Amino acid sequence: MNEPNDRPGLEVRRCAFFFDVDGTLAEIQPRPELVSIPPRSLIALEHLHLSEIPVAVISGRPLSQLDDLLLPLRLPAAGVHGAERRTAAGEMHNLALDDDVFNAIHRELEQACAKHPGLSLENKTVAFALHFRLAPELEQQARELAESFVERYGDVLALQPGKCVFELKPRGASKGEVIRTFMQESPFKGQVPVFVGDDLTDEAGFKVVNELGGITIKVGEGPTEATQRLESVGAVGEWLEGLLGALAEQPQQSNETRLKRE
Image (tube, rainbow, N blue to C red; front, side, top):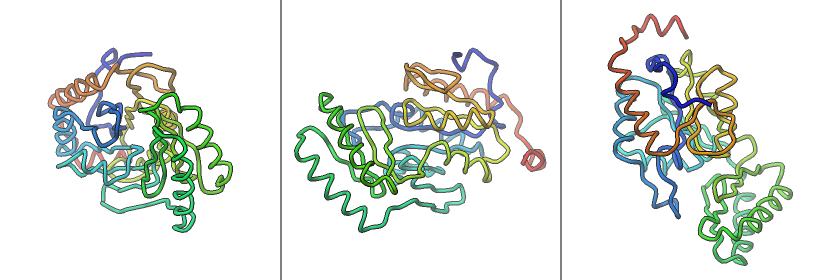
């Protein structure tokens, strides 16, 4: 597996960039609300966006949290693994459970989690997350609980393991499929997809981007479908700044050139 800098520089203006957030753009923290994106990375993302380079974030977080983390940016984004999506034109597309079903699952999860102090339930408005980062000894209980709900509500729920979390997301929500959808729309269409992520939730995205002939970069250690690797969140920030340097050296495409590729 290669480091991104082991290969010739990217033709940045021909790429469309997709980024996970926690563990990729931002360090993972004990609680989701403690996470922040380093200023250097925010500045680089803003520069790419203002340079009309297609950039989107693809995360397990709800869109509302993504927007708060990215302020003052408001990027195209997919939240809750694709269950929520905002296009480059600002259009919203959501996969949502029936309200009565969602509320019933929420009540049952709250009751089940109350039996395991240290297990934290997060309501993402269209999905649920069972966090055990503060109580790693509860991993097996969290897994069994999540699996039991998928067995009971398998027609509407799917299980998504992550780093110290098991998520119950709407069936059909996938980082891979939401990237595929973005790539069919302007300004992503006709570009080379580049996806940077760090954990199990990103593997579906890596797989699809590989199928599309793009570039996949895993942050950190572990087996992966990605073909390249960066060692840390800090390395992602350095790589982003490197993209800006490459961008400054590459001529801007004409509208005619882009339209021909699309």
